[in-house]
Length: 554
Image (cartoon, one colour):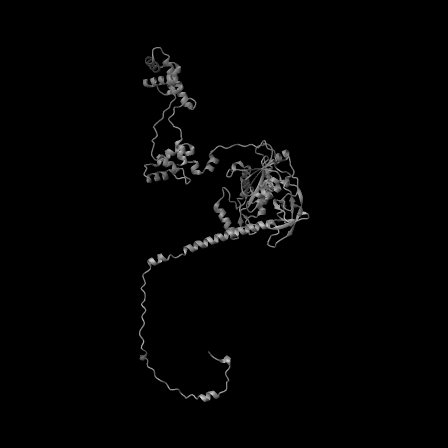
């Protein structure tokens, strides 16, 4: 059964009597006017019939009491005898609540197609009322367009035209449901950083190829002050860009945060970053909170990205974000490919972004009125400096020591007295830009020694960055090759000839009988010929042998 039908079946009945608490102000005033008339009639000693006749006579003669006249005027007209009796009996039973107007109107017709209508209407394709009614008629029901429209519009909002079954549960939750209002008054600057990646809404010239591409911005924002403490620009969301942004934030501001509020993506949740022993978070003892996937409202940095695109992205002609002109964008990209237009470079975007950051940090804080973001950071920061100063770009991995050396990323490292740790597991910290050395630690974090590169294969790049780029390049070529094979397979399928289908339409071919005419050798006319001169064999034998072997003609 469709979930919308289940919710419809659980709806409360609409025929319940009104109570004084849930009645409207108009209904309460009307009930009070009725109660004034009823109480007057019930307190008369002559009885209800004679008291009502006296009230009618006095009202028509304009001699009735002011309270009674005002009550009758509020009702609009003097009620009839039967209505007065009904009011009096209801008042005796349930008091003033029974005098509330409860006109139910015409009872709703219960059509046989209601459940099927809900199933058809509440689909991700968002069909119209006319489409639903047409489908109902095709299935044997009798439904008009206006009947379907009135039925759907009379339902609660969750079953109406903007239901979660039509627009999606995520969008419905973000647009129509209530959400928590969070405050950061209890946080101090430098305690919690919020990090996320964002694909720029601007086409830039690729640094290597010059073709249009959209770079990936990885940024970390201090939650309390809203300052951007670290950022990195790369080709796509990756662990290396995340590590570079975090390292820059810690080194520039000389502060290690206590918590990270991060995206649940692969660039933040991986072995290099959150391993319990060698991960970057464990290295600095940082607690990590991963956001719920698809719930962007809880991340403060998402608002920063939106604000940044309005101030930076829209300054470029290759902007492709919200409110952009798609035809103009296509024209710009076409002219760029033809060489008629120059795309903005990465350096130009970085210059605009840095200028924007300066204005952003010196603008008013959204919660601390009268103070800028930079002032909140400078006045309330309590720095926790890192223990080491060379932590930047030194990720860690566990290695096993064998025969006084260990292997890391297809590279062999050794050091003096390293054989003393044979059979043990240590932690190796390596530089992504220089693979000539590593730093060895115990599992508890105690530093031991430096290990130098022992042997290197020429097939291994000298930098792990180059190795990562080579791996990325290989993956891209592999995907292109897969696409090429797919296109070739499709072309092959189009050129396949069905022999059976061709034979069906071909005309039958009769076999040609093998006929051979009889030959009579006696029919040939053979006439003997005489040579022009007689050949003397002795003359031939007496001639010298002048011919050579290579002059023979075969």
